[in-house]
Length: 482
Image 1: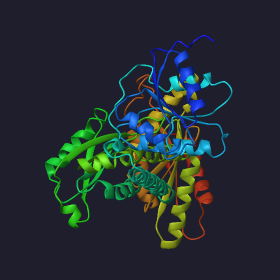
Image 2: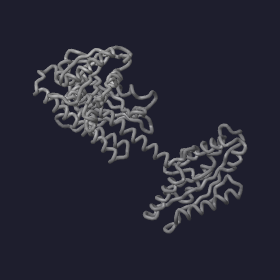
Image 3: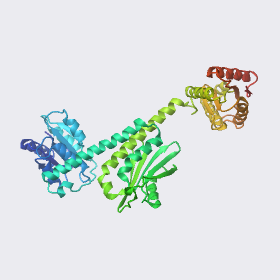
Image 4: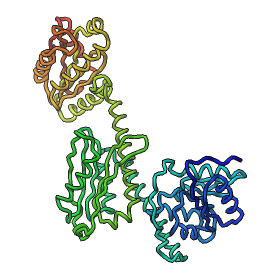
């Protein structure tokens, strides 16, 4: 067998209570040019790690005193050894073993077969090929006596950590099932996480329709300079030119919130989801001891915030795609008619007034014929923007097909809408369309209709407006009838 050509020889920590299996793995790795360290169980492995810095750990799953799952969990929960790759092996078949291996944080899991060369390949693949130095330190247990009591205490702490992590993920995940509003999601997230961070401050920045928005909560002992420092730390992750207005809220003013911080640490983490751009930032100012103790929880919170914001961003994108016309950005026919139907219902219940206008671009077919469909699309887009700008904030406008648009004015009678339509007709034709000849001004023909009281329907209003629009075009276009 030809030894594999690794980028560099590795030092491998082998952990197995079976001396035959341990010897086989030892000779196998040596034959491939690697050196080995050996331990008969997880406790011995921790003793080895107190003085050695291997590149990877290859461990059996079932061993006395401290098995492979427990060893992996202790290593992954310890800041000193968290980045040490762990490959777990079992001879008992997959079953639940694969699940437990994933749960305890193992980097890979293999079922032992007759050909153990695959173990070497997988172990080597777990090591950073760039040769970048891996953070290393003594495991926490190396500072204790490695007795049964110490091991059991650490395992109990690791189990408690898993429970807290699961509860944190579950609490944040349930936010999205209860709320579908970005601000409420952020406030719910902050409410959950502030129990870990405060006294101090917690700040969440996310991408809104108007740029980056920040919301934060702080303990009463935290000064304005501290909050400004946290804002500055978050601003480093915000794209240049994006607004970064921060909204701060004080936390509940109990004894814990009033306590001053003795050794504050400022951390900022991007909230990301794999395959998705950065959609948010998590920043906090907290006691160094709390940051060290809850570091993994903060990382999970940043991951869950990224997932939460990615889901919300996707939901908003799909929602806008469902209600917007892709060319003009205005409401599409279905959504506009749904909103108009609800307005008519409000008129019937409360006696409100309501008027609508059907709008048609004059001679639009000639634009397509003379300048092409690309120019026609450009005209539609420009005219849509002008109509949206020319209407009031309370009015709604959308494209209902081709060159035809629909707008309506709540609490507006026919006379009020007629004045609005005349002003709109004049405004949109003042400036030429960019890209078209100066003399080619696009004008509007508009037909009006008003709600005529109980018994009137959307279909009847649309029919009256359509009749008036037809009359406006028949009388020479560029006019309002109704």
